[in-house]
Image (cartoon, rainbow, N blue to C red):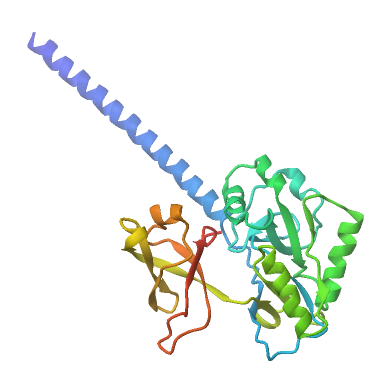
Length: 305
C-alpha cells in the first residue's frame, strides 16, 4: 500500500512537471507571438522619413500679390509615397483599394477631407484599423508633389496632368487662385470664413520644395490658433454651476492659462479629459505671454496620427 501511495505521488509529480513544461512552452510561444505583433505594429508606425514643408503666419505688411491662394482645409494631413498612404507622423492608413487605385506612382501631399465641419468624423474614419466604406465619403485633396523638382507651379502641373489622364472621385487638386492684391486676399478670407472654412493658404508659385517652416507658404486667418494640454477643470457659476466653467491648459512653452468660452452645453457636461490635447484660437498675446481672448475649438484627436 505504501508503494502504491508513493507511486501515485511520483506519478502526480511527473504530471505536474509535464503540465509545467507545457505551460512554459505555451508561455514562450505566446511571448513570441506578442513580440512579433509588437514588431509588426512598430514597422507599421515607423515614420517614412518625409519632412513636410510647413506654413508660417501671414502678416498684413507682406505683399503677396501674384502668389496663389487656396482654402486651408480642416482635414487630416496625409502623404502618398507612390504606393502607401501615411499620416503626417508616419502611420500607415488602410483605405479601401478603390480609394487609392488611381493615385500616381509618385509622392503627393494633401488633406483627407470630408467637407467643412467634418473634422471629428474624418479622424474617426481614418483611425480605424481595418479598411471600410467610410473612406469613400472622403477625398484626398492634393496640395503638393514634394519629390518633384522645380517650382510649386511646375510641381502642381505634374499632378494636374496625372489626374487629367487618371480621374478619380477620391482625389483632386485643391483649387488655387492668383492673389490680385491685399483687398482681394481679404475678401477671399471673408468668403471662406463665412462658409465655415478655417482660413487660407498663400504660396509663392515659383518656390521650390523646402522641408520645414518656409517663408514661401503662409497661413492667413483672422485669428491665430494653437494646441495646449488640459491640466485641470474649473467649475462654473450661475448657468454653468456644477459643470465646466473653464479649462486650465498648458501651452507648448509651459505657459498656463484658462479657456472659458467656446464650449457647447454637451462639452461643459463632458469636458476634455485632463492630459488631452485641445485646439484653441486667440488674438495675440498679453505682455505676460498669455494668449488674448482664448476660445476653445475642439479636442485635437489627430495629434498621434
